[in-house]
Amino acid sequence: MDSPLYGLVLVGGKSQRMGRDKALLSYDGQGTQLERTAALLQSVCERVYISQREEQAFPCPEGSEAIYDSVSEAKGPLCGILSAMQTHPEAHWLVLACDLPYLQVPTLEKLIRTFQAATPELTAYKSSHDGLPEPLCAIYPSGSGQGLLQLSQELGKSCPRKLLIVNEAKLVDQDDPRSLDNINTAAEYEAIQDAN
Image (cartoon, rainbow, N blue to C red):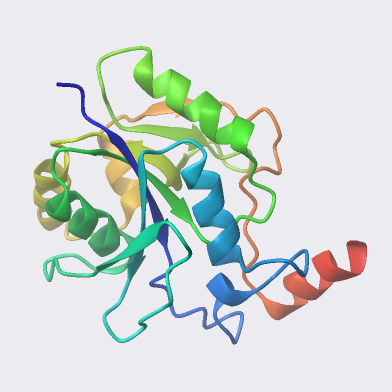
């Protein structure tokens, strides 16, 4: 049986530079980034989950469910990714950060096509800024979680980007170099609002 593709929105960060939760920001006045990102994933994945810390208790957008951080050996985004893989080990996981306002469905479809074209392996976009893997717009194949955790412990690092580099993840070029630009500060957010 083929493994299903599930989507995971990461909202566990503390948004310290923004000063408020990035997942709850709106760029079009119609929905939050959490709602928008979940909807993007729902268009290409069988199920969608919202990765968060236990104390956050975000209301999940319609059609999605929460997965709470449960892998104590990992930190940050890696904890969220591994917690999802532990909860549903049968699935491949398309993982997205919640702060990618330029991301569109065709970008996700290209990533999925590349992943499905060969034996399942870690597949990520190549950053248009530095050429390194974008771990928060990537597909983590079923069965890869334990290896990622072990490598993280060996390296003493929980940085998903570092793990994708060491694992030589398959990298995909962005058609739109802005598609994965994220928004981290209040000034960046206001600049986008002014431009719209």
